[in-house]
Image (cartoon, rainbow, N blue to C red):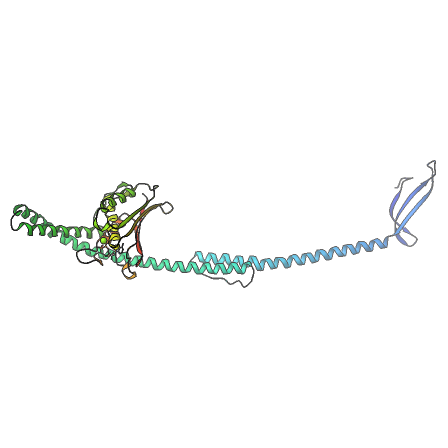
Length: 362
Ligand SMILES: Nc1ncnc2c1ncn2[C@@H]1O[C@H](COP(=O)(O)OP(=O)(O)O)[C@@H](O)[C@H]1O
Ligand SMILES: [Mg+2]
Protein backbone atom coordinates (compact mmCIF):
# COMPACT_ATOMS: atom_id res chain seq x y z
CA UNK A 1 0.00 0.00 0.00
CA UNK A 2 2.76 2.42 0.87
CA UNK A 3 5.78 2.73 -1.25
CA UNK A 4 9.06 1.78 0.16
CA UNK A 5 11.31 4.68 1.02
CA UNK A 6 8.44 7.20 1.25
CA UNK A 7 7.02 9.05 4.22
CA UNK A 8 3.88 7.53 5.80
CA UNK A 9 1.23 9.76 7.41
CA UNK A 10 -1.86 8.47 9.24
CA UNK A 11 -3.46 7.56 12.51
CA UNK A 12 -1.70 4.78 14.27
CA UNK A 13 -2.52 2.73 17.39
CA UNK A 14 0.61 2.73 19.42
CA UNK A 15 0.78 0.74 22.66
CA UNK A 16 -2.64 1.67 24.07
CA UNK A 17 -3.88 4.80 22.28
CA UNK A 18 -4.36 6.40 18.91
CA UNK A 19 -1.70 8.76 17.64
CA UNK A 20 -1.49 11.08 14.65
CA UNK A 21 1.74 9.73 13.35
CA UNK A 22 4.34 9.96 10.65
CA UNK A 23 7.02 7.41 9.72
CA UNK A 24 9.87 8.65 7.55
CA UNK A 25 12.92 6.70 6.24
CA UNK A 26 16.47 7.64 7.34
CA UNK A 27 19.22 7.50 4.71
CA UNK A 28 22.95 7.42 4.92
CA UNK A 29 25.18 9.48 2.66
CA UNK A 30 24.89 6.92 -0.09
CA UNK A 31 21.18 7.18 0.13
CA UNK A 32 20.59 3.76 1.56
CA UNK A 33 17.79 3.30 4.01
CA UNK A 34 19.32 2.68 7.36
CA UNK A 35 16.39 3.22 9.68
CA UNK A 36 13.07 4.82 10.33
CA UNK A 37 12.02 8.00 12.14
CA UNK A 38 8.71 7.97 13.96
CA UNK A 39 6.85 11.05 15.23
CA UNK A 40 3.46 10.74 16.94
CA UNK A 41 1.11 13.04 18.83
CA UNK A 42 -1.75 11.79 20.94
CA UNK A 43 -4.94 12.11 18.88
CA UNK A 44 -7.27 12.68 21.88
CA UNK A 45 -6.16 16.34 22.29
CA UNK A 46 -7.14 17.19 18.72
CA UNK A 47 -10.46 15.44 18.89
CA UNK A 48 -11.34 17.61 21.86
CA UNK A 49 -10.42 20.85 20.02
CA UNK A 50 -12.44 19.65 17.03
CA UNK A 51 -15.46 18.91 19.20
CA UNK A 52 -15.22 22.26 21.00
CA UNK A 53 -14.97 24.17 17.71
CA UNK A 54 -18.01 22.34 16.30
CA UNK A 55 -19.89 23.09 19.53
CA UNK A 56 -19.10 26.82 19.36
CA UNK A 57 -20.09 26.94 15.72
CA UNK A 58 -23.39 25.35 16.59
CA UNK A 59 -24.00 27.89 19.38
CA UNK A 60 -23.21 30.83 17.06
CA UNK A 61 -25.58 29.49 14.37
CA UNK A 62 -28.36 28.91 16.91
CA UNK A 63 -28.00 32.41 18.43
CA UNK A 64 -27.93 34.03 14.98
CA UNK A 65 -31.05 32.12 13.94
CA UNK A 66 -32.92 33.19 17.06
CA UNK A 67 -31.85 36.83 16.57
CA UNK A 68 -32.94 36.68 12.90
CA UNK A 69 -36.34 35.28 13.88
CA UNK A 70 -36.83 37.93 16.57
CA UNK A 71 -35.78 40.65 14.12
CA UNK A 72 -38.28 39.44 11.49
CA UNK A 73 -41.05 39.37 14.08
CA UNK A 74 -40.14 42.92 15.09
CA UNK A 75 -40.10 44.14 11.46
CA UNK A 76 -43.42 42.45 10.71
CA UNK A 77 -44.97 44.02 13.80
CA UNK A 78 -43.55 47.48 13.44
CA UNK A 79 -43.50 47.96 9.66
CA UNK A 80 -45.39 45.37 7.63
CA UNK A 81 -48.57 45.24 9.75
CA UNK A 82 -48.99 49.01 10.13
CA UNK A 83 -48.25 49.39 6.41
CA UNK A 84 -50.96 46.84 5.67
CA UNK A 85 -53.40 48.75 7.87
CA UNK A 86 -52.52 51.96 6.05
CA UNK A 87 -53.14 50.27 2.71
CA UNK A 88 -56.50 48.90 3.89
CA UNK A 89 -57.54 52.30 5.28
CA UNK A 90 -56.52 53.97 1.99
CA UNK A 91 -58.69 51.48 0.09
CA UNK A 92 -61.61 52.31 2.36
CA UNK A 93 -61.11 56.01 1.62
CA UNK A 94 -61.30 55.31 -2.10
CA UNK A 95 -64.75 53.87 -1.42
CA UNK A 96 -65.77 56.97 0.54
CA UNK A 97 -65.27 55.35 3.95
CA UNK A 98 -63.21 57.84 5.94
CA UNK A 99 -61.55 55.59 8.47
CA UNK A 100 -58.73 56.68 10.72
CA UNK A 101 -56.02 54.40 12.07
CA UNK A 102 -54.20 54.32 15.38
CA UNK A 103 -50.59 53.26 15.54
CA UNK A 104 -49.26 53.94 19.01
CA UNK A 105 -45.56 53.63 18.29
CA UNK A 106 -43.25 56.63 18.54
CA UNK A 107 -41.34 55.79 15.36
CA UNK A 108 -41.84 56.79 11.73
CA UNK A 109 -44.89 54.53 11.49
CA UNK A 110 -46.55 56.37 14.37
CA UNK A 111 -45.74 59.67 12.66
CA UNK A 112 -47.03 58.35 9.33
CA UNK A 113 -50.33 57.35 10.96
CA UNK A 114 -50.67 60.86 12.42
CA UNK A 115 -50.06 62.40 8.99
CA UNK A 116 -52.51 59.91 7.48
CA UNK A 117 -55.21 60.87 9.99
CA UNK A 118 -54.62 64.56 9.32
CA UNK A 119 -55.02 63.81 5.62
CA UNK A 120 -58.31 62.00 6.30
CA UNK A 121 -59.54 65.04 8.24
CA UNK A 122 -58.54 67.39 5.41
CA UNK A 123 -60.22 65.23 2.75
CA UNK A 124 -63.37 64.98 4.86
CA UNK A 125 -63.51 68.72 5.33
CA UNK A 126 -62.95 69.41 1.64
CA UNK A 127 -65.54 66.82 0.72
CA UNK A 128 -68.11 68.47 2.96
CA UNK A 129 -67.30 71.92 1.61
CA UNK A 130 -67.62 70.64 -1.94
CA UNK A 131 -70.94 68.97 -1.13
CA UNK A 132 -72.25 72.12 0.47
CA UNK A 133 -71.14 74.25 -2.46
CA UNK A 134 -72.64 71.87 -5.00
CA UNK A 135 -75.91 71.79 -3.11
CA UNK A 136 -76.01 75.58 -3.00
CA UNK A 137 -75.20 75.73 -6.70
CA UNK A 138 -77.98 73.26 -7.52
CA UNK A 139 -80.48 75.21 -5.43
CA UNK A 140 -79.37 78.43 -7.12
CA UNK A 141 -79.56 76.96 -10.64
CA UNK A 142 -82.99 75.51 -9.88
CA UNK A 143 -84.22 78.86 -8.54
CA UNK A 144 -82.84 80.75 -11.53
CA UNK A 145 -84.37 78.20 -13.90
CA UNK A 146 -87.85 78.55 -12.36
CA UNK A 147 -87.46 82.35 -12.29
CA UNK A 148 -86.48 82.11 -15.95
CA UNK A 149 -89.59 80.14 -16.86
CA UNK A 150 -91.83 82.61 -15.05
CA UNK A 151 -90.09 85.66 -16.50
CA UNK A 152 -90.02 84.33 -20.03
CA UNK A 153 -93.75 83.54 -19.80
CA UNK A 154 -94.46 87.13 -18.83
CA UNK A 155 -92.03 88.50 -21.42
CA UNK A 156 -93.72 86.52 -24.21
CA UNK A 157 -97.13 87.75 -23.11
CA UNK A 158 -95.94 91.37 -23.04
CA UNK A 159 -94.07 91.07 -26.32
CA UNK A 160 -97.20 90.90 -28.50
CA UNK A 161 -99.08 93.94 -27.15
CA UNK A 162 -95.77 95.80 -27.02
CA UNK A 163 -95.16 95.16 -30.71
CA UNK A 164 -98.64 96.62 -31.37
CA UNK A 165 -97.93 99.70 -29.26
CA UNK A 166 -94.57 100.27 -30.96
CA UNK A 167 -95.92 99.81 -34.49
CA UNK A 168 -98.93 102.09 -34.07
CA UNK A 169 -97.16 104.77 -32.04
CA UNK A 170 -94.34 104.87 -34.63
CA UNK A 171 -96.93 105.26 -37.41
CA UNK A 172 -98.69 108.00 -35.42
CA UNK A 173 -95.37 109.74 -34.79
CA UNK A 174 -94.71 109.90 -38.54
CA UNK A 175 -98.11 111.56 -39.08
CA UNK A 176 -98.03 113.89 -36.09
CA UNK A 177 -94.35 114.93 -36.03
CA UNK A 178 -94.17 118.70 -35.58
CA UNK A 179 -97.72 118.97 -34.16
CA UNK A 180 -98.70 119.45 -30.48
CA UNK A 181 -98.96 115.67 -30.04
CA UNK A 182 -95.55 114.89 -31.55
CA UNK A 183 -93.57 115.18 -28.32
CA UNK A 184 -96.03 113.05 -26.33
CA UNK A 185 -96.00 110.34 -28.92
CA UNK A 186 -92.20 110.44 -29.03
CA UNK A 187 -92.30 109.69 -25.28
CA UNK A 188 -94.64 106.73 -25.90
CA UNK A 189 -92.26 105.37 -28.55
CA UNK A 190 -89.20 105.82 -26.32
CA UNK A 191 -90.82 104.15 -23.32
CA UNK A 192 -92.10 101.29 -25.48
CA UNK A 193 -88.55 100.81 -26.80
CA UNK A 194 -87.29 100.71 -23.21
CA UNK A 195 -89.88 98.02 -22.42
CA UNK A 196 -88.73 96.03 -25.43
CA UNK A 197 -85.15 96.20 -24.19
CA UNK A 198 -86.27 94.84 -20.83
CA UNK A 199 -88.25 92.06 -22.50
CA UNK A 200 -85.19 91.18 -24.57
CA UNK A 201 -83.13 91.13 -21.39
CA UNK A 202 -85.54 88.69 -19.78
CA UNK A 203 -85.49 86.45 -22.82
CA UNK A 204 -81.67 86.58 -22.81
CA UNK A 205 -81.66 85.49 -19.19
CA UNK A 206 -84.25 82.79 -19.79
CA UNK A 207 -82.06 81.45 -22.59
CA UNK A 208 -84.75 82.01 -25.15
CA UNK A 209 -82.63 83.96 -27.61
CA UNK A 210 -80.62 81.96 -30.10
CA UNK A 211 -76.86 82.11 -30.20
CA UNK A 212 -75.18 82.99 -33.46
CA UNK A 213 -71.87 81.36 -32.90
CA UNK A 214 -68.65 81.82 -34.82
CA UNK A 215 -65.02 81.07 -34.12
CA UNK A 216 -63.73 84.21 -32.43
CA UNK A 217 -60.95 85.56 -30.28
CA UNK A 218 -62.22 86.44 -26.79
CA UNK A 219 -59.49 89.11 -26.37
CA UNK A 220 -60.81 90.95 -29.44
CA UNK A 221 -64.35 90.82 -28.04
CA UNK A 222 -63.14 92.37 -24.78
CA UNK A 223 -61.07 95.09 -26.51
CA UNK A 224 -63.89 96.05 -28.83
CA UNK A 225 -66.55 96.36 -26.10
CA UNK A 226 -64.21 98.35 -23.86
CA UNK A 227 -63.43 100.69 -26.73
CA UNK A 228 -67.06 101.76 -26.78
CA UNK A 229 -67.36 102.05 -23.00
CA UNK A 230 -64.30 104.14 -22.23
CA UNK A 231 -65.99 107.25 -23.55
CA UNK A 232 -68.93 106.95 -21.14
CA UNK A 233 -69.19 109.43 -18.27
CA UNK A 234 -68.98 106.91 -15.45
CA UNK A 235 -65.64 105.60 -16.77
CA UNK A 236 -63.98 109.01 -16.36
CA UNK A 237 -62.18 108.13 -13.12
CA UNK A 238 -61.83 104.42 -13.84
CA UNK A 239 -58.47 103.09 -14.82
CA UNK A 240 -58.77 100.07 -17.09
CA UNK A 241 -56.01 97.44 -16.94
CA UNK A 242 -55.90 94.59 -19.42
CA UNK A 243 -53.94 91.41 -18.87
CA UNK A 244 -54.90 89.31 -21.87
CA UNK A 245 -53.02 86.07 -22.56
CA UNK A 246 -51.81 85.78 -26.13
CA UNK A 247 -52.04 81.99 -26.35
CA UNK A 248 -55.83 81.76 -26.34
CA UNK A 249 -57.19 79.87 -29.35
CA UNK A 250 -60.34 80.89 -31.19
CA UNK A 251 -63.45 79.63 -29.43
CA UNK A 252 -67.06 79.30 -30.49
CA UNK A 253 -68.80 82.53 -29.43
CA UNK A 254 -71.80 84.68 -30.15
CA UNK A 255 -69.65 87.82 -30.30
CA UNK A 256 -72.57 90.26 -30.00
CA UNK A 257 -73.87 88.58 -26.85
CA UNK A 258 -70.41 88.12 -25.41
CA UNK A 259 -69.72 91.82 -25.97
CA UNK A 260 -72.83 92.63 -23.96
CA UNK A 261 -71.57 90.34 -21.16
CA UNK A 262 -68.31 92.34 -20.98
CA UNK A 263 -70.42 95.47 -21.22
CA UNK A 264 -72.67 94.55 -18.28
CA UNK A 265 -69.75 93.57 -16.08
CA UNK A 266 -67.72 96.67 -16.92
CA UNK A 267 -70.66 99.04 -16.39
CA UNK A 268 -71.44 97.39 -13.05
CA UNK A 269 -67.78 97.74 -12.05
CA UNK A 270 -67.79 101.44 -12.98
CA UNK A 271 -71.05 101.92 -11.05
CA UNK A 272 -69.41 100.31 -8.02
CA UNK A 273 -66.52 102.81 -8.16
CA UNK A 274 -68.21 106.22 -8.13
CA UNK A 275 -65.06 107.79 -6.68
CA UNK A 276 -62.81 106.09 -9.23
CA UNK A 277 -60.78 102.91 -9.09
CA UNK A 278 -59.33 100.17 -11.24
CA UNK A 279 -61.16 97.79 -13.54
CA UNK A 280 -58.98 94.86 -14.42
CA UNK A 281 -59.79 92.29 -17.08
CA UNK A 282 -57.64 89.20 -17.31
CA UNK A 283 -57.83 86.24 -19.66
CA UNK A 284 -55.96 82.98 -19.63
CA UNK A 285 -56.13 79.59 -21.23
CA UNK A 286 -56.52 76.68 -18.81
CA UNK A 287 -55.59 73.77 -21.07
CA UNK A 288 -55.69 71.26 -18.25
CA UNK A 289 -59.39 71.90 -17.74
CA UNK A 290 -59.93 72.62 -21.40
CA UNK A 291 -61.33 76.08 -20.92
CA UNK A 292 -60.73 79.80 -21.23
CA UNK A 293 -60.95 81.90 -18.07
CA UNK A 294 -62.00 85.55 -18.08
CA UNK A 295 -61.69 87.52 -14.85
CA UNK A 296 -63.27 90.94 -14.43
CA UNK A 297 -62.36 92.63 -11.16
CA UNK A 298 -62.87 96.04 -9.68
CA UNK A 299 -61.80 97.93 -6.57
CA UNK A 300 -65.33 99.08 -5.84
CA UNK A 301 -67.77 98.93 -2.95
CA UNK A 302 -68.17 95.15 -3.09
CA UNK A 303 -71.26 93.00 -2.56
CA UNK A 304 -72.54 92.00 0.87
CA UNK A 305 -72.67 88.32 1.78
CA UNK A 306 -76.44 88.57 1.91
CA UNK A 307 -76.77 89.93 -1.63
CA UNK A 308 -74.11 87.71 -3.17
CA UNK A 309 -76.59 84.90 -3.78
CA UNK A 310 -79.20 87.19 -5.32
CA UNK A 311 -77.33 89.52 -7.69
CA UNK A 312 -78.00 87.24 -10.64
CA UNK A 313 -81.74 87.14 -10.04
CA UNK A 314 -83.64 89.11 -12.68
CA UNK A 315 -84.75 92.53 -11.39
CA UNK A 316 -82.50 92.39 -8.36
CA UNK A 317 -80.87 95.79 -8.08
CA UNK A 318 -79.53 98.01 -5.34
CA UNK A 319 -79.50 100.99 -7.66
CA UNK A 320 -82.07 103.74 -7.60
CA UNK A 321 -85.19 103.48 -9.72
CA UNK A 322 -84.51 104.41 -13.30
CA UNK A 323 -80.76 103.69 -12.98
CA UNK A 324 -80.70 99.94 -12.68
CA UNK A 325 -83.08 97.35 -14.09
CA UNK A 326 -81.45 94.44 -12.32
CA UNK A 327 -81.19 92.57 -15.59
CA UNK A 328 -77.49 92.97 -16.40
CA UNK A 329 -76.20 90.02 -14.39
CA UNK A 330 -79.29 87.90 -15.14
CA UNK A 331 -78.60 88.33 -18.85
CA UNK A 332 -74.91 87.68 -18.30
CA UNK A 333 -75.76 84.45 -16.48
CA UNK A 334 -78.08 83.36 -19.29
CA UNK A 335 -75.58 84.11 -22.05
CA UNK A 336 -72.63 82.43 -20.32
CA UNK A 337 -74.83 79.44 -19.56
CA UNK A 338 -75.80 79.05 -23.18
CA UNK A 339 -72.12 79.05 -24.09
CA UNK A 340 -71.80 76.07 -21.70
CA UNK A 341 -69.69 78.23 -19.44
CA UNK A 342 -69.78 79.04 -15.76
CA UNK A 343 -69.83 82.29 -13.81
CA UNK A 344 -68.56 82.75 -10.29
CA UNK A 345 -68.46 85.80 -8.00
CA UNK A 346 -66.05 86.65 -5.21
CA UNK A 347 -66.49 89.89 -3.35
CA UNK A 348 -65.48 91.72 -0.20
CA UNK A 349 -67.37 94.75 0.96
CA UNK A 350 -65.16 97.82 0.70
CA UNK A 351 -62.46 96.00 -1.26
CA UNK A 352 -63.95 94.99 -4.57
CA UNK A 353 -65.51 92.28 -6.66
CA UNK A 354 -64.23 89.67 -9.08
CA UNK A 355 -66.38 87.90 -11.65
CA UNK A 356 -64.82 84.76 -13.09
CA UNK A 357 -66.24 83.41 -16.31
CA UNK A 358 -65.10 80.16 -17.85
CA UNK A 359 -65.84 79.17 -21.42
CA UNK A 360 -65.09 75.77 -22.91
CA UNK A 361 -62.34 75.47 -25.50
CA UNK A 362 -63.99 74.38 -28.70
N1 LIG B 1 -69.04 94.95 -9.68
C1 LIG B 1 -69.98 95.09 -8.75
N2 LIG B 1 -69.69 95.62 -7.54
C2 LIG B 1 -70.64 95.76 -6.59
N3 LIG B 1 -71.94 95.38 -6.75
C3 LIG B 1 -72.29 94.86 -7.93
C4 LIG B 1 -71.36 94.67 -8.99
N4 LIG B 1 -71.99 94.10 -10.03
C5 LIG B 1 -73.27 93.95 -9.64
N5 LIG B 1 -73.46 94.39 -8.40
C6 LIG B 1 -74.71 94.37 -7.63
O1 LIG B 1 -75.60 93.50 -8.30
C7 LIG B 1 -76.82 94.17 -8.59
C8 LIG B 1 -77.41 93.63 -9.88
O2 LIG B 1 -76.61 93.96 -10.98
P1 LIG B 1 -77.25 93.96 -12.41
O3 LIG B 1 -77.93 92.67 -12.61
O4 LIG B 1 -76.22 94.35 -13.39
O5 LIG B 1 -78.35 95.04 -12.29
P2 LIG B 1 -78.21 96.63 -12.20
O6 LIG B 1 -76.82 96.98 -12.60
O7 LIG B 1 -79.23 97.10 -13.15
O8 LIG B 1 -78.53 96.95 -10.80
C9 LIG B 1 -76.43 95.62 -8.65
O9 LIG B 1 -77.52 96.46 -8.35
C10 LIG B 1 -75.36 95.72 -7.57
O10 LIG B 1 -75.93 95.82 -6.29
MG1 LIG C 1 -75.89 96.24 -14.29
